[in-house]
Image 1 (cartoon, one colour):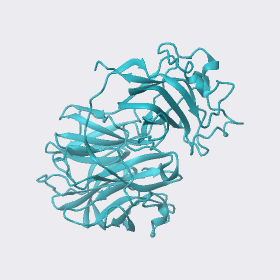
Image 2: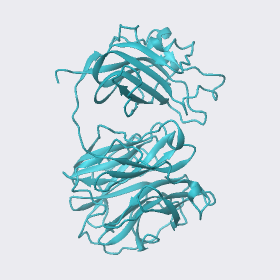
Image 3: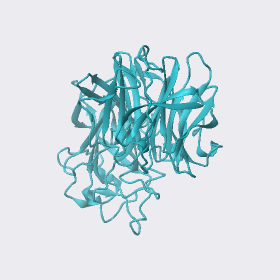
Image 4: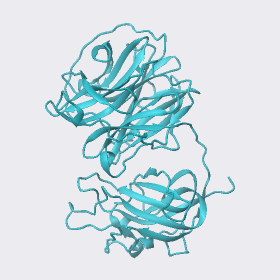
Length: 496
């Protein structure tokens, strides 16, 4: 995590480091990825906070990376510690005997400039770290002189840009590196035959431009079986560190690059309360042999670090066809129906009436009385609070239905303050009993005369809960006005 101060520094060293073995950790033999994260039994998040740091007056801890040596029993965690005194990041270390419960150790790397994102790996029996060093306008390679405590700068892989979150991986007998700049909207791609020198920018780089929703890295990139590269990214377009997304790089050659998002992405997202109420922006998963163990950071009042686990699942890009038929909604309930009488009426006007359903080509864009919006109170700094408590809207369907998409018609009467992020959870009991794990969605800016449609894995439900976390802003008092005109749930196309 960078901060907004620029300092230029430079050191040069070019030891010859061969590529006789691959990067460790190495999951190229394994064909499953981590999704469906949950907190491990016996763990209370966060497991590490600024208060645990004993040798620095810490503002927060963030950007955690795991490391567990082959055959060893002890886990290590490297992470950023932001010092209140110097207002710059330093690299801290914590230890664990089970990978779940952590004890802070000490600061292991400090420079005259900001450090964060300590990507630690092993190669050729040596330990390396590539931290974020954007204030030095460079990507710097460090080698352990006394692992895990002593580190020495041995090479500069690239320079001349405000590089952030460099993420290295090994693929097709070549080293590759993703990196972003401080705009959060551009991602560069570099590669080399040798770890320590010879790095060149890919002909297609930047491979992502003008898209802060996917460009910035959010954790360790790695290769799995089938020659698939997994890239972890963070969503930064609405606000910094909103959610963590997973991408599969399915085409990577000396001249071409292409990726697609994993169907169940995003995999981590704000909960609306507690240590990760407002966002999650980093993930480092580690395969243990029977599960993925993962470390992540979240933002509540400040950044802190938590633990998750996930079963491995194969990548699935199968998509069911989205039909133009909608599940019939019979009732809508809202536990905080703070309707703005100037902009709309009650939540039940999100449908054309019980038992009627939706008209896909004629939403309520021309009838202000049929819009719905949370109300504002007083002046611009006194909005209805979307956070820490989300707006909860429950939909009861007439029938138990197979659905695989949601469409939202945005509310122009709320002056663009339409839903930007929300969660859905589903039940087959006709009520809130048995609600499954929620799925997180976000929308981009859309026009009001056509819906935005978001797909998901086919799900059977007759009751759906929608939790609106925020619409546009991450503000101390919670959020801005939120408005909608219509919501519809698409039935899965039975002919597919």
